[in-house]
Image (tube, rainbow, N blue to C red; front, top):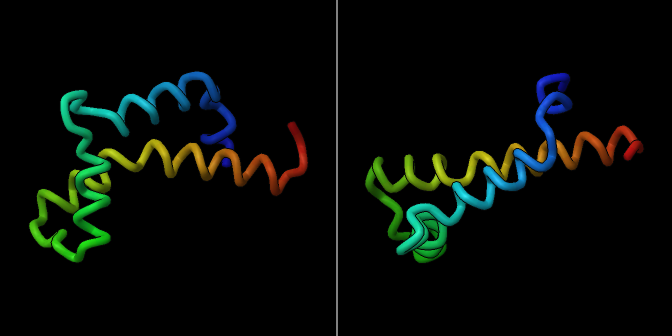
Length: 73
C-alpha cells in the first residue's frame, strides 16, 4: 500500500483521464466497454486495449478505497 501513498492524486487523476480518453479521436475505453457489454469483446487485442486504458482508473479507485478504509484525508 505504500506504493499507492507515494503517487500524488494530481498526477494519478490527470493520467487516468488522459489514458481513458486516448486516442483523442475515438476513445478505446468507451469503445471496448461497449463491446464488453454487447458480448463482442473476443479478440486478444480488444482485451488488451480494455485493460491498458482502464488500469489507471483502477489504480485511482484503489488509492481512494485505501484512503477511505484508513479513515484519513
